[in-house]
Length: 95
Image (cartoon, rainbow, N blue to C red; front, top):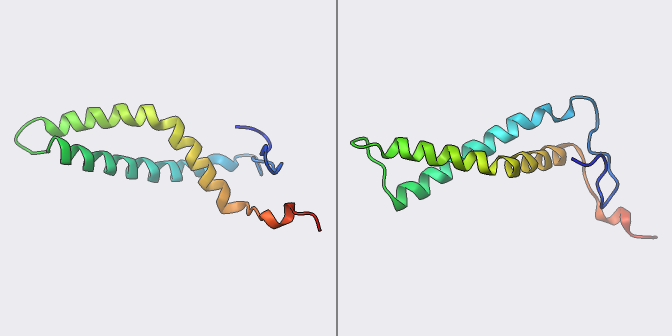
């Protein structure tokens, strides 16, 4: 992650250990992502308790989570930073 925003120049690490809170945001995003994976998998393939379809979904979900983890981590950092830093586009305009 860059030390300063390329657009506004805002420092991205406000204090030491600032990004520890992104683990909670990343967890929520991963649960939401898994729920969406379960929904599309259930609609396309169907899931029952009588066969191994849940095991197959867990395998597919695990692979997709590993592939999308860099995206989820960046997204969680953006969401977490927006909790603490407010960007006002009006301040960029000259008087």
